[in-house]
Image (cartoon, rainbow, N blue to C red; front, side):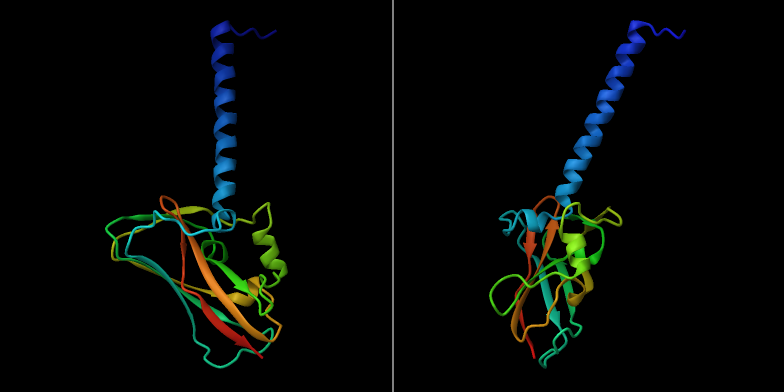
Length: 178
């Protein structure tokens, strides 16, 4: 029969409790960070001046229903602060919000539902920094996340969650679907 002295029992108990506490804290913090723009649906007042997020598309002609739409994303840090953010995958890093011609959010594709509905889909979670003067560029296929099949004008905006400063929203662009 194995007997542990009271000090060993006490230390073991506290190590288990501490491990459980840390694991629970990580789950809570990480779950919120995966969809910060959806959970906190407003721009932050604490984003440093000089930090901007700009989106654009190359197509100048109307887009065909269910046609591919490539959104170019550009995050620029002209501030004197270092930005910290999670690098997961582009559709989670830069959350697009698409409003359909009838005024509500456009329907999500199956992939869009899988990354926007809890439990949030995750591939990796790496911390990256953007130094003053640095620019981050990326591209995202809008129709991978949203169904764009109704004719009319759609409004598109991107959001990026910055760890120390909150949500950064882009300009809005309009695109016509025919």
